[in-house]
Length: 357
Picture 1 (cartoon, rainbow, N blue to C red):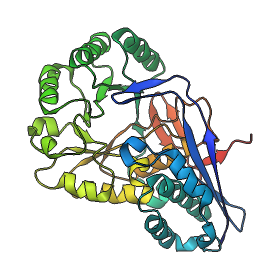
Picture 2 (cartoon, helix red, strand yellow):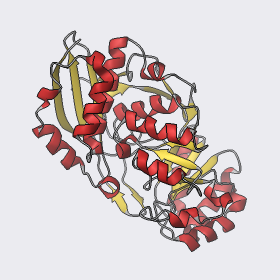
Picture 3 (cartoon, rainbow, N blue to C red):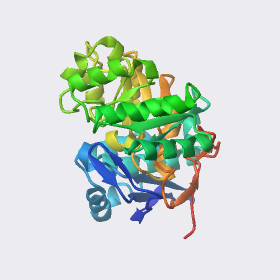
């Protein structure tokens, strides 16, 4: 079954509201859209939105390659040589995870549509569903509480709070959430490298009573040695994010003494499902738990991450809220979300379909 066409374009999706993290404020969202067509009319969709701060590739870089690339190497290929095609993608675009993500996800989608099974069935489903966190950006205490109330009222059971600019205000925000909701919700935090070694040690000691579920990338990702030197009780809660981009990074982080207890896998960092599963295998063999995260993304790539997450037995956490604040999307379907719990919809491939514009 041969590939007959590859189409690409940039899509402006927008945001319902801007938000801030430790190193930037986000006001709008754009993504790449890639479509692979087969001779029988089936099509697969891929999408990406890499973070230039993390992977040194912007969406403009991605689109320049996708727009200028001659996909003759892919046209005419048999989709049944699926793993060889993934190898080609990862060989040709080694330094561009945004390009690799779009192609990888589209190939997984169209191949599992060809097999007429959901992607997670092809990968081997280990988990039926999981609760996702929903993210509160860096805000003052009043705004934090207003947004927390909105999300709890919508049924979400897990709040992820962005921190990293002021320890005192960070702790006050978290304390107010616990004061209002007690243990009825789970709270996890993401400092986005906003602390140093001494600050995260102080923060941990002062927030023990708040029963925080996990701490994403609290200190500088460029040097993981300080994370290795943290006490084991802190490290067990740390999810490596910006310091985990590739399988090579996974090996390094897991090497004794391990720098963290959790890997936060993002398709936009590692370049798609194939490399994500490589990282997941390293984690499983190193007794490291998995968290699956995202950037601001279309339902296409969020669904791909969910399928991959539910196929891994060591997945414990998901933070796949990247499409929930979009002003619009280019597809529908993909996953079912009810009271914060996510599951796939049982349709072939990613379970997404293009919205006719």
